[in-house]
Amino acid sequence: MNRDLARKATAEAVGTALLVAIVVGSGIYAQRLSPDDIGLQLLENSIATGAGLVALILAFGSVSGAHFNPVVSIADRVLGGLTTKELAVYVPAQVLGACVGAIVANLMFELDAVTLSTHTRSSGGLWLGEVVATFGLLMVILGVVRSGRASTAPFAVGGYIAAAYWFTSSTSFANPAVTVGRMLSDTFAGIKPSSAPAFVVAQLAGGALAVGLARFLYPDLPAADMVVPHAHTDVA
Image 1 (cartoon, rainbow, N blue to C red):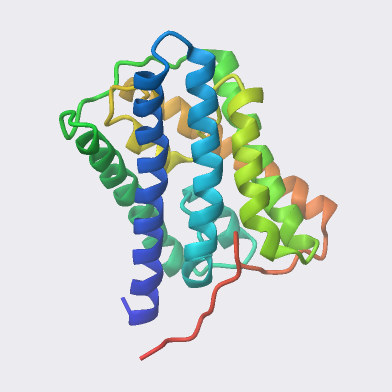
Image 2 (image 1 turned 180 degrees about the vertical axis):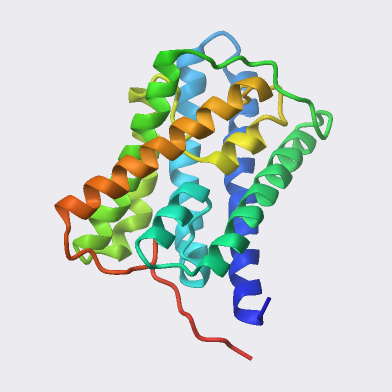
């Protein structure tokens, strides 16, 4: 791995770790602050996640594109923004980062480092919710890139995810790496390991549908980095 790719992989790992720490940590705190109001818990969790995404994409976008999501990276590879080698490095970095983020969140709130979630999320409606959530996320990203307004992507993505917490039945995981990380915390944001594979399949299906529609809507879609364009030059 060359130095430039190592830098990108590090950005993806650290960014995804912070994202999952935000999702899981705010979920834990929401449960403690509002123990008798699930709606308020979701509001607190969604605001923290949306705001955190904006900050993280702004911080890491210039290095790696701030994907933090294997589906985004796969779509970027299909559309020519990533090489196969980069994809092969990005995805493990994202999954590893997600697991570390969940562990750190657990420890911050003085829980066991790893406690597998017992929160079952398994039904046709939830799987459809993940297809919709991931499809919408990719369409937002691709539409922003196609419009030439990539600099607004952090705000578009953060806003979409905050909204998708509320309009999708699954509360919008929309990310295989985050799904894996959330298996490691038996808290508000957790997902039972046996429920995770179907969520990942639904997310991949939503991503594939979005790439297909984007090719039709934007036939001249450029090979552009997602979410935020990043430099490809190696810095000594």
